[in-house]
Amino acid sequence: MMQVLLVALTSALVAWWAPAQRPPEHFGRSFVAAEAGEAFLSVRAGCAGCDWGEAGRESVALRVSLDGTYSQHLQLVRGEGLSEYRLALGRVTTGQHRLDLDRDPEMSAPGAGAVTLDMARSDVTMLFPGSTDYTALSMAPIVYARPNTVGKFTDLPLLMWYEVVPTPRGRQYRYSVIFSNEDGGTQTDRLMATWGRTTDIEFVYGVEVDETDRILAEEFQGPGHEVPAFKGAHEGRHPRLWVSTDNNMVSETGPTAVRYAPVPVKFDLTDQAREAVMDAHPWTYAIASVEMRREGKIAEDAPPGINKIPDPRRFVHVEACGTIGNAALSLSIGSVQPQPAGGVRPQLSGSVRLQPDRDLVWSPSDRGRPQYRIVRDGCFTIATPLPAGTRAPDIRAIRVHAFARPADGGAARAPDRRQFQRIKKVFMLDEHFLPGTSILKWEGPVMIAVGGEPVEIRIP
Image (cartoon, rainbow, N blue to C red; front, side):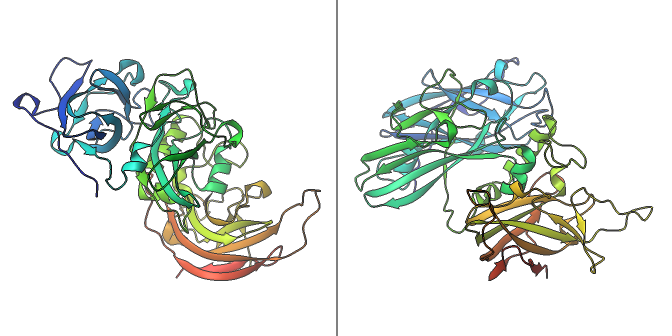
């Protein structure tokens, strides 16, 4: 259980916000650490007129300082409503400390309004050595912004999580970051087809410790997805990492000073896809979706291959698990469309009408492109667009296809059978770009012939 120390209050600090002319806005507070440990800030805040999806009104950035020294930036990305933001402030010594949050005009959108902060539901807390999660949180990385994202409201690190993996010598903590998008690397439509999202999820840092929490080895994911030993600088036990590529790989050094240190959440991904972390924090879907809209990556009936997608609310998301081996997997979604005015049903490019079931339109997740198929074992997520007007209740069935993949020499591998194990969830986004209720959970396993007939799973 995390040991918690509430901040000390004085009559002069009943409110965070000291009323003043705007800009700048200033929020200040003192707190007392009963002993040395890790400090964390939880604030509920919003900004008037802010909308991450609207150019010029994206967000307000607050510059966070601890005892007069810059700590990090807090980007208020979740709009006007009060939302919780949790920041790691690092190690502090015993005694009184001062925390200040100031509006940063250079990092804030020009059309963003005043900041509101809910004092009653905002606190500084402390975690001390020996407490549960102390080791993991005391070694979480500090992430510096990529130079071409500073002040640009793009590819923002939204969330960090960690996993604990046993090793022969002890255990490894593995930290990953969900970025709001990636400006380089995988195209938007392929991200949806093979990952079921437009965020960029990247492992950034791993640290192995023994039973006494002594560090045995460190690593990071560098450019080219290489994972070398980490030999960079730390603050306390926190490694410093710079996002250095347009697909959000990190390096041990970099030119930027703007940085972020969200409190990582613990997550067990056993028999789950990484996108389950997003499902547990559904607001990440909304931020990613409206960033796509603002950056011009959403177009009506966008065909595959142009780095654009149709409205994200037209996509069905499926999390499933299987043993794919040297094959490739694709899912087709069968839906029935409500009859529109005029009697002509909309037909999305890439969807296929199959006989004799005249009521279903089949939308393949690979969208007719072999490179958009799933080629990894375990749990995965896909998302594919359905014809306009389709909602979750219109989905009737899912077909699972297994395809041969070319061998290294270019020749197709011999036909085989692959095991499809389960479907964990099937959902679409609602009008606010948030995940709706899942309409299917199915348990197999079932064998699928590579290059043969698909297996069809009906929605009850």
